[in-house]
Amino acid sequence: MPYTNEEGGRLNNFASEPKVYQAEPPTNKQKITYILLGLAGAGLVVGLIFVAFSVSNVG
Image 1 (cartoon, one colour):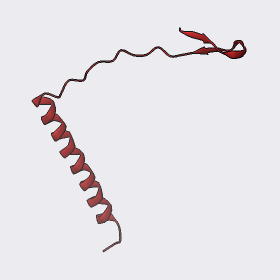
Image 2 (tube, one colour; image 1 turned 180 degrees about the vertical axis):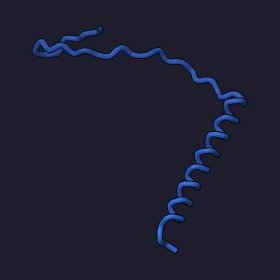
Image 3 (cartoon, rainbow, N blue to C red; image 1 turned 60 degrees about the vertical axis):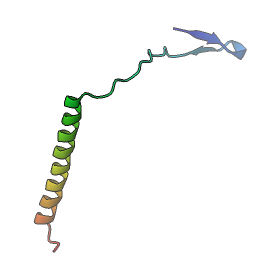
Image 4 (tube, rainbow, N blue to C red; image 1 turned 90 degrees about the vertical axis):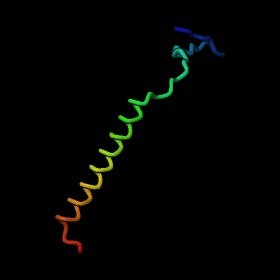
């Protein structure tokens, strides 16, 4: 652990920094997976809104 001495004899402990790396762009398969998950999430939200309106006394 890297410690530094500050004024007055206090010790300051710094966290170790993670290695930095360049992210790689998603592959075509990953892009399709993201699109399908987005559509499934949007369908779930629309379905929940439909159920909420159908069981309520509004309209």
